[in-house]
Amino acid sequence: MWWTRTSSVFRSDAARFALTYLLVFVGSVAGLGVLTYQTIKDAMENALRERVEAEVKQLVGDYEDEGLVELRHDIRERLDVSVANRLRYSVQGPEGRVIFDELLPLEERGWTHVYGKDGGSILVWSEDLQDGYVLAVGADLGEIESLSVATQQRFGVVLGLTVLLGLLGGYLLLRRSRSRLEAFRETAEKVGGGEFKERLERDEQDADLDALASIMNQMLERIERLVENTRRVGSNLAHDLRTPLTRLRHELEELAEQDSMDRERVETAIRHLDESLAVFNAILRIAEIESGARKSSFQDFDLSAELVKLAEVYEPSFDESGFEFTWSVESSKQLRGDRTLVAQSVANLLENALRHGASPVELRLKDVGARVELSVSDRGPGIPEADREQVLKPFFRRDESRTTPGSGLGLSLVRAVAELHDAELVLQDNGPGLVVKLIWS
Image (cartoon, rainbow, N blue to C red; front, side):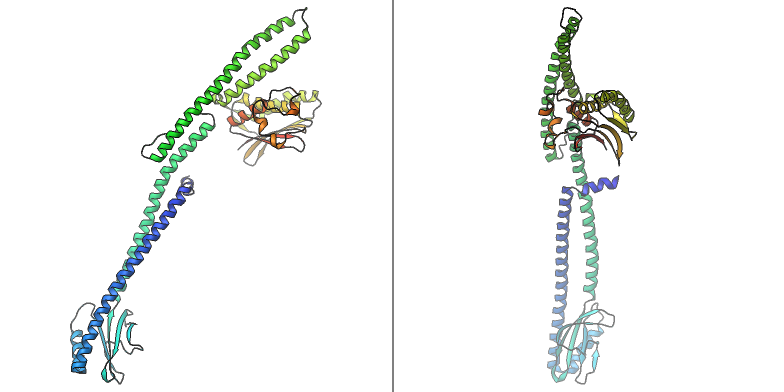
């Protein structure tokens, strides 16, 4: 779980930007460190060169003024004095004999690097003297090399700490930002699910996101008012119209019992009123579902058992209409939701197949991997792909279905029930016909 949260943080755009910035910063620090190190090393080496050059100049002058004996005497005096990091001296005679330090023979004159018996590097200046003699003066580079190794080690530690602290600091900042964005996402999902009273928490320490939260809260308040007004108008209209229609239906029933009345015409009027009342009931039911009020009645129930009951209820209706009706329940799905609404949505699909479809009709519940799929299929004319989104909207009816009973609210109700129960509603071609699926992940 910890690794999942951490990896999700570092997959964000902000994390990639922070890592890029960290890489640029570390690269800059590394470049500055290398430049500083090289500058110090060059300065120390130049100081040694100046020291060697000054020593060579003095010894050459003594040799030219007083000869080889004075040169040997001066070198011996310097070697007898025990000082740290003393220079090294070497003189080679015409016969090839080398005295003092073993720096010679050298193939080239001027500056060169040689290695002493201890393996240390020595910076050497060699110069030809009169009478075939060669003078070489060298400076041990061990101190510079030791300093270089120590500097590199310390710089590596500092660079590693910089990267570690940068990653840690970036992770903490990103995690805090990510937690707020996650809160935004959760709130948006709840609002999308019908919980319009949800609001984003404010945090004055984060000015940018706090300003965004303030704007979004104002937007959510306006959305809540608009949705509430729309629902209230629709519900009030349905209630106000349903009441007098219900009274009118009762009066028509009473009239139908009188011998003087045309019973057939009265029953036709009652049937039309029933259709109108069914429309109003569907409107009220959809408004109730979309408000999220039905979630309070959620409970666990056996979806497979509910489908068996529906299949047994509708089987005689399909037989009377001459439809071949088959059903199979291959999953023991336990669903948490509103049993009545789920049953009504499946009943709407079966009614649509009976009214607009053609034989055979199949009701099926099966497992598809980790998902559960409920489907109702028929071999009727089906719905063109261009109209499949439209038929899910309230009161939409295709021209071909306007001659058959219905209000255009059946699939709208199914869609509302699917969203309420976190199910995916899919309409597919059955070649020919239509397959309507409710899929739970």
